[in-house]
Each structure stands twice: as C-alpha cells, then as structure tokens.
Length: 246
Image (cartoon, rainbow, N blue to C red; front, top):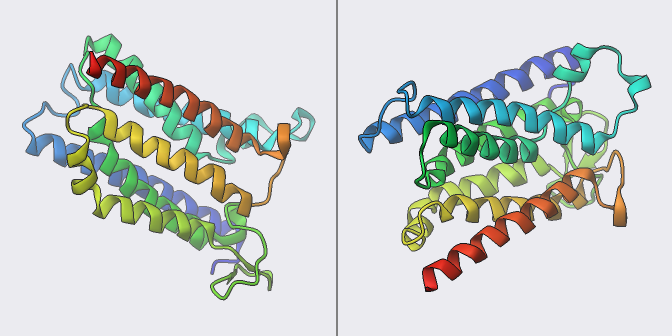
C-alpha cells in the first residue's frame, strides 16, 4: 500500500486518466464495430465533448457539496479545482453533458447503452487506483473487524470499499451481454438501469465510509445526490414504460 502522499497522488492521477482512456477506447472500438461514425465526426463530437465537460463539472460540484469545505479554508483556486473527485457527480454530469451535446447535434435517438461497458470498465480501473492510493485518496472505508479488512498504512483495518466497487463493476461488466439482451426493447434503458444500480449501491456503501459533512437525516452530500438522481431516473423510466404500454 502506498503511504507517501506525493506518490499516492501521482498513482491516483495515473489511474484516473487510465480509467478515462480505457472508457474512451472501449467506446470507440464498439462504435467502429457497429459501423457508427468516428468520435470526431460532426454528429459524434458534440455529445462526446458535452459528456467530458459535464463529467468534469459534475465531479467537482458533487465533491464540493459533499465535503462542504469552508471558503476560508481554501488555499487557492487551483487547490479547489485539482483537489477531490466524485464518481457520482462525474456520471450524472457526463450524462447531462451528453444529452446537451446530442441536442446541439440534432440527435434524437437513445445512445446511453453505448456507454455502459466503457463506464463499468472505467470504474474497475479507477477504483483500483483509489485502492492503491490508500488513505490519501479518501475513499477507503471505516475501521472494521472483518477478516478482509485492509490496513492502509495507519495500523487500522478498514473496509476496502474501493475493491467492493471494482468487484461490483466487474460482475456487471461480465454479465452485460445477458442483462442487456433483456432490455433491448427499450433503447437507452440499460444505461439507466446501470445508473439506478450504481446510485443505490453508493447510497448503501457510503454508510461504510466516513462522512465529512452530514446533511439531513445524517446522510452525506453524495448520498443525497444519489437519492435525487434516482428519483429523476425512475420518473423517466416510468414515463417510458407508460408510453411503451400505449
């Protein structure tokens, strides 16, 4: 386990960018196999750009909301921009960005299913980096007495919540062909089902993590973002199911 803060930060950045590149590579290969236009094609670039910008903005906004850092404690603008990430915010922000890009490009079909495997594989790579970065990443769980607890360098066994998430993403990825086949009648629903599963997972697993700032009902900012996201997604799924039944 990495105990040096400077090295841990470098490892985290490496795996963070590796996760992004892995997702983009898988997305590009799958589009090419399907005969879809390249990522830089006029109709494809706006959603891609919107997704990247939305993810970048979302992960920062969600992190700031979750940590609730007082402005008086902010060292500099760069420390505020570079410090801290949120997968939940990145996914939700990226989703909104893609939808905005599709509107700009005049795309009306559902494209979310194309992002499922890239997102899952990106999670596997990214959470592996979080695990290696240990305490300095801020994503490990609370102290525990379970046999698989991991000492991240402070002599205290903790829940390896990063590996829990990486394992969940791996299981979802290898079973993707099967559960995707069940949802082919509703294009775009596989992505929303994945998001529902991930947001539910984050609400539950975050009870095993330290909370930097508790909001209503003692829940963290990330948990509340997940709850709001779930409500919006379920409303959309319900609306689509009603249209399908008509």
